[in-house]
Length: 90
Ligand SMILES: [Zn+2]
Image: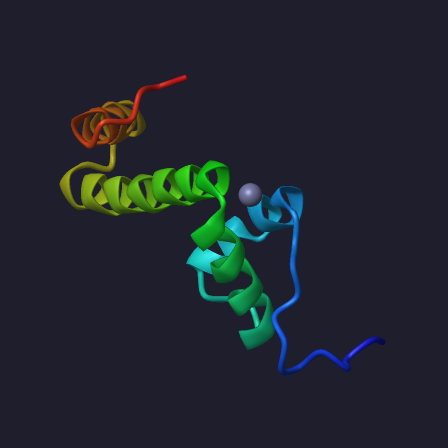
């Protein structure tokens, strides 16, 4: 175990950041990992886009769940919400 870096935020790469994305949004990271992700996203446009999309996605899903429990309708709702927010389906 290497735990001598409690004070300084480690630099992490894009792969690591994206892998932590969902845990970050679920607030399941410990404080130092959380800080590493935040520091990376602040400086990296590529990852910032990923995170913005994921945040919008979760928001769209929870809104759609309030309105419908039919999977097809739910999917349509989520895609519509994302499109309204300026995201395109790939
Ligand atoms: Zn990145």
